[in-house]
Each structure stands twice: as C-alpha cells, then as structure tokens.
Length: 464
Image (spheres, rainbow, N blue to C red):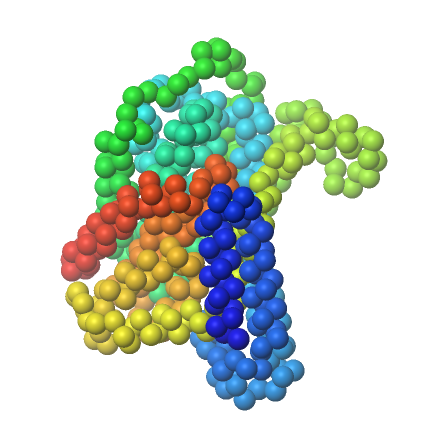
C-alpha cells in the first residue's frame, strides 16, 4: 500500500509539472492526490508498520501492535493535526493577500512606484532582490513575495519581463528568510524547537544568505532579459494617485510587519496576528471609502449593490482561490507521506548510506552531503516534513552548527524548483509561471546561489 501511495503522489506531481501540456489546472491533481493518498492510508492502515507523530517529531512506538480502532483514531488525529497546520498557513496567506488587495484598491503601490525613478531593468532587478531579502527576514518569505510581486505588477507591465523578476524575487526571498527565525517556516520550526537561537542564526547564516541572493542576481544582471529599459505607459504616468494611497500603503505594510511582533509578545500562531492586522486595515479602508461593512448583513439586494463599493468585498473577490486550494492539496498530500514515516525513513537512510564526504559536522559524523541532499529534497518534495524528520533524527544541542546548516539548506534549497517553496507556489499562482519555464530559466541560478551559500557556510562555521 505504501508503494501505491508513493506512485499516486509521483503521478500527481508529474501532472502538476505538466500543467500546460495537459491543459489541466494544477489544483486538480493537487486535490486529487491529497484525497487519494489519505483514502489509501485509511484503507491500508492495518498493514503499516510505522507511523510518524508530527507533534513529537518521532515515530510512534509499537504502532504495528495497536488494534484497528486505535490505529484509525491515531490516523484521524494526525489528519486533523495536519489540516490545522495547513489551515494556519492558508488563513495567514488569505489575510496577507487581502491586505495587499486593499492596498491595491486605494492604489497604494503607486506610492512605491513613484520612488522607483529608474526604468533600467538591471537596477530594478537589484532593487527588488534587496527588498525581497530584507522584507522576508522581517515579515517572512511568503508575505514578502506577495507584496513585492503586487508592486512589480504595477511597475513592469509586460508579463514576459515580469516573470523573470519574479523568479529572482523567489531566490532572494528564500535567502532572506533563512537567517531570520521568522523568515521561513522551517527556520521557525527549528527556532521554536529550541535548536537555534536568533543571535547565532544571524552569525552563522547572514553571510551565506547574502551570497545566495547576490550571486544569482549578479549573474542574472548580465542576461538579455535584464538588459534595456522597461516600457512605461505615458498616460499612466500622469494619473494622480488616490487621496489615501500613501496612508493605506504604510498602514497595510505596517500591519504586516506587526504580525511577527504580535507573535513574539503573545506566542500565538502568526495567523492570529494577521487576522488582527486585517481587521484594522479593513476598518480604515471602510472609513476612507465611506461605506458600511457587516458580516451579518443578509439583505442580498443591498449587499450585492454594496459589494461593488466596499473595498473589503472587492479585495476578497480578487483573492486567488485556485492558489489557496493548490496549496491545501499539495501540503496535505505531503502530510500523508510524512505520516507513514516515508519521509522520515528516507532522511534516515540518507544518513546511513551516504559516504562521509566533506567536513564532519559533529562526533557522530553526519556528512555535509546529507544536509545538502536535504536541501535538494526540499525542492522536490517539501522542506517542512524533511526538517521535521531531521528534528527526530539528530540529537545535537542547541546552536550546534548542524541545525544552522539544515536551516540554510532547507530554506534556500526550495528555490531550485517553483513548487519547492511557499514563495515559489505563491508566485506561480500570482503570475501563472510555468514549471518548466522556471526549471530552464531560473533553477540553475538558484542552484549556483545554493552551492555558493553552502560553501560560504562551511567556511564561516569554522569561525564560531
């Protein structure tokens, strides 16, 4: 049954990558493999020998000896756990996207557009790469990608040009997220799991992360795609921005930046802070647009007419729901593989079978190659379960260099494929980027950045 689940996952994964060839929206195979994998798990639960407890990041002892009812109960609990964790990401994503759309409703991004005086593609590339790197460390790589691609859509009108910039934003955002405890979900996992501290994370990973962003951007600046100037609509240049555009921009971005502060103070999940931020931004949006907004308004005639004027209704109607559903499908499908201990055993077998190449990280001898392959694996599957597996596999103390290398490798390795990171998945949805286009044009740049950053880490870790 395990083999059947892996086959279903691989076939579904292929269908996602061949989206444009099959003319089938990627959310369909994503939802299909999610439902099929979990159905096969439920049908074959008595035949499985292992079960991975995501809460404890370890295999359940004596799972094979449990009776059918206990196994089913454990499976239902696990499914609910993964749905909860996935919902946290999706609700956070919905909040961030809605705030971005509200800013756009008031033409807030025209304020930033006004600061971008240059038309040079090369200068715009560097501007967005640096912004992605800094913003992702503050507000996380997922939100930074949403914000910057929204701004990019206002500055670069030609989609053929824009997807190149989006590709480099993904690399820069993932690099920026690696050295911050709130910049990437895997780094946050290691931070919450008391494996790394903020200070040492910065010391170990800042220079490798900078190089991971700078080197691909430097190489890309010589490519034909970034030569010349962007096309600007002269009529659009003369348009006056909305009266409240600047206020809503600063309020919206400030509300997003507030989320990690809220999390640090309250220790609640980030989505709670994002909902509070959305409530505040929505309140000001309704005040400035002089409309009423009520979730309890059941007068359909009035509410339908009102929907055309309410910035909140308008913004919610523009949310990319297919991207949200795709995210749900792919994360829950990976969760099925994780629950059976397949990913855990895969990571464990890597440790046992790989030769001892490179500098040994600690006395037990985990090779650098294992951690590098973890980074490559995070691009192909998903970095969250692989890092979860590493939490259960290794027993090194807090701030051991192994944990920092895992944080860098899992955080930046996902850039090598468009569906290898949350930032990539969001960009794919927002700009309809083709999997194979990214593979041909951007993946090699991400690989160079990953290798250069890893080599830099191997040098910098000797200093601490």
